[in-house]
Image 1 (cartoon, rainbow, N blue to C red):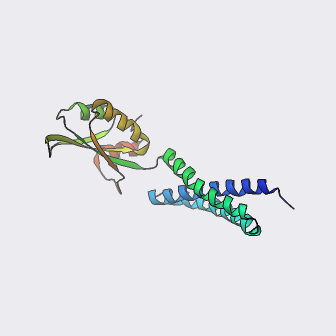
Image 2: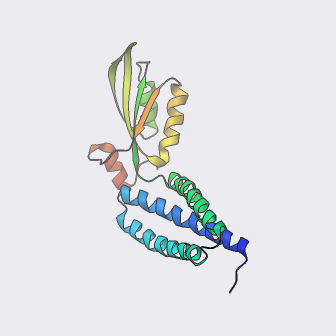
Length: 180
């Protein structure tokens, strides 16, 4: 059966976007510890990959199919990244350093449900207040907004913790009460 060359390009392009998106999400799930869910995603990913590659290999004389495959692959990386961003799996630790030594920012963050540990610090230009905040990645942007509203000059660094143990915050996460 002969398929329209333009339709074949669209099919190959689309299949590769879906395949690479699944691949990206699976890798993130694996790294975040969602092994069983990642295994299920990989089963679907493999089927999609075989179908897409098969279409290209069956039509190697058509260079446009190879180009569609490559462009679809690159586009899939972008789409997969956006999907992972929306899923926002896991947690982040945010370190905040302010030049103002007052309790306004830590208090406001605690009232919003964030676990904040704060202490006095010294910087190049004098005394500072330093804070460490742990939050689900889904709440990351709201946290930044709150910090910037209260102290637009705050210095913010975020990273993903490898493991979490203890503290009031972890108990709230296990009970499902955080941010409800």
